[in-house]
Image 1 (cartoon, rainbow, N blue to C red):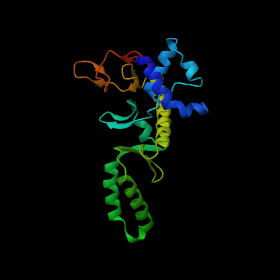
Image 2 (tube, helix red, strand yellow):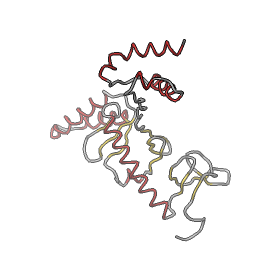
Image 3 (cartoon, rainbow, N blue to C red):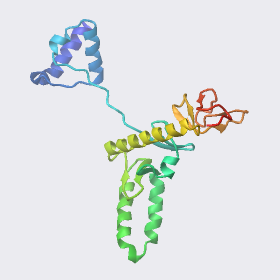
Image 4 (tube, helix red, strand yellow):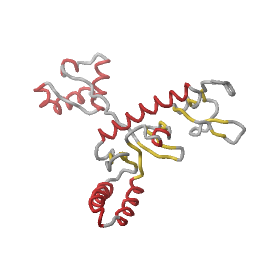
Length: 217
């Protein structure tokens, strides 16, 4: 009885869309239809053009912790930003607002155009809720996930690719180690128990090194 009531409900809800043979359903309904098909149900007759809805991609997250900058829990090597190997750097939105207030107050009459640009940046940042944003190292451009998620994700991808390439080269030279638990390249730290290990997970049993201790390249 439950099965037939669910079928009837979906038939009513999807009737209009079925006329054009193109429709989209929520994930719960999608999973239900898929399970019934796998069990030999007749949904292939009721819904001949049905395709399960794919899960939406969540995108990337940016966070700054005591160890450094993280993108989707992957620690980015600090050299990437310090040596300007990419066009963007992460910044704390509220800190940037405070700095802009200071710079605007210090702008003289001979820097009116700069002042106007900084006021625009200030208004833009004040209108956001993001904790962290990307800042262009050459211009006054800011990219926030809440405002332009597509571009935000593109920047994250570019930095992750550069980080993997850069850290991979250092690892091959024996200048970085790899933590399999955190899936990231690291510089080991003294864990305070007579051993060295990962600064993130504070473990020493998941470290991979290119060269044995004291071995020449």
